[in-house]
Length: 109
Image (tube, rainbow, N blue to C red; front, side):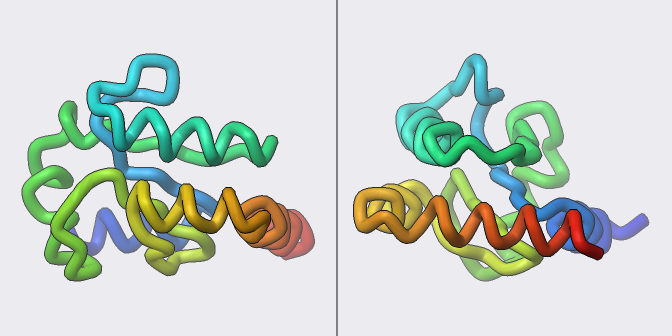
């Protein structure tokens, strides 16, 4: 399978996906750690992909959505952004409703 097709399937088959350096329990960079914390604070389930253990994803994800850095957070197949945007949404109180809606839509499908 083509790597871009693999990424597309990952973001389309999961309500919320974070591509990060490390894992939620052991983030390997501060930006990934802060973004995961914001997701965890919202109390919803999400899928995490450790880009450090999948070289093809690490090398090709930036061109998938034309976003050059990690982490990358996708909700319902769409790129929300990276750490700064995620934290801003969280601080404004907009992240949790967005994530809850995505999870609830998936459950209803």
